[in-house]
Length: 280
Ligand SMILES: [Zn+2]
Image (cartoon, rainbow, N blue to C red; front, side, top):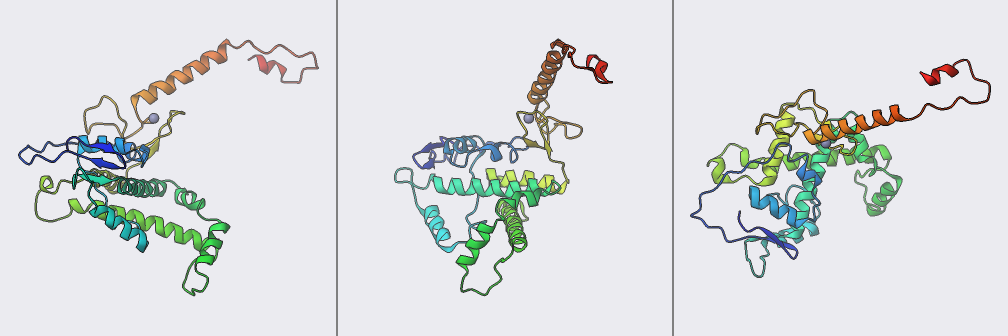
């Protein structure tokens, strides 16, 4: 896509030139774990930058929200055209929805890969206040809404997993059996991001946490000078070479500071039996 930029509460772009040769673009490794998880859903300029580089954003309003009024509002937004750019536009609310739903789905997947991760993920939503709010909403209703914290926990878990499955289903549709090549189908940024996730799921990949104390990012493949597709996946602790270097320098500085520190002076009080150990 060309000339994609944020304008007001929209992302707009240039009218496509259909004679142009379509250029191929590749998402970087672990795009779904890094750029997609780190972007602020309201940062339209950042998303416009992706669209310039990789193509349309993608995402489906059918993948998540089940609230009827909200769904009608989103449907209307999908049909609405920018007053000046017409159909070459995407409303900011749709961008925020697609990005935040993708982030929620990816967070569920990352949590699935950690022992106890899923329980930890939903714990903030499993509270007495939430339970009371649900009871208040369903006051006259005898249907099976959760009445205990355990029931609420399993309902919340079920919902998170259903949203992850839906995100995969809608975003992977471009790669299913069907007519037309991938070039014709023009898979979107989000569909390729979820293909990366699906490939990690299929290969049972290990999601690591970067050992650089100031980073802590989730990753599968280390990024560095390796050629595209050749990054290391085993025995690595850092998400990038820069993180490995930063942590090594930090540890070096700490060791230096520890050896430079003067040994504590002996105290006047009676030394314990292990006093000499302090000087070792
Ligand atoms: Zn890192």
